[in-house]
Image 1 (tube, helix red, strand yellow):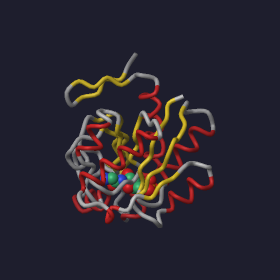
Image 2 (image 1 turned 60 degrees about the vertical axis):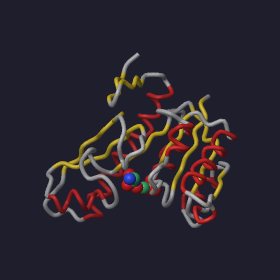
Image 3 (image 1 turned 90 degrees about the horizontal axis):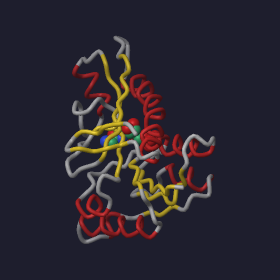
Image 4 (image 1 turned 30 degrees about the horizontal axis):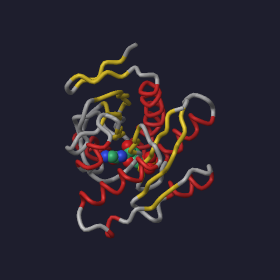
Length: 201
Ligand code: GAR
């Protein structure tokens, strides 16, 4: 059974969708640890409720970003993690962590990448006036919200949408495609060539 390490900064609803997929037998995985950079992240409560080991790593306690990410990599390696899952981890991941888990770090972003990278992606989409929005699961490289795309799901944007209503619609898609992308990884069905991912046996 593959060991996952989850990094989250806040609410942790994507973390929960992964926990639920494991619990109902849809994902053959174990969450070896949750790492958070925010002491008051609700994700910690979710970990407690499900007896998942969790660690708070205080970014202010490190002399540099590189040392911060090296210590996260150390923690994940200590837990024998094979796939790192960023679930609302609101930081740009740096080289020491990426090098420790090459093409083994996934992220979910609430936009159809490469559109609307960075913060408040749903508001960016509304402000731009797009008719279709969505979410993307991708492998992580050193740029912001960048790296080979694994899965995307589109949702409609309605004329009376608010940031909240659009975010809620996108979140439903997120909770569907993130566990699915992890499942494809576990089953060895993802082949990365350059910046593209082929899905198959
Ligand atoms: C999700 O919408 C996720 O896509 C987004 O943060 C939210 C976290 O929600 N991530 C990013 O914007 C990363 N660039 P959650 O804590 O309930 O999973």
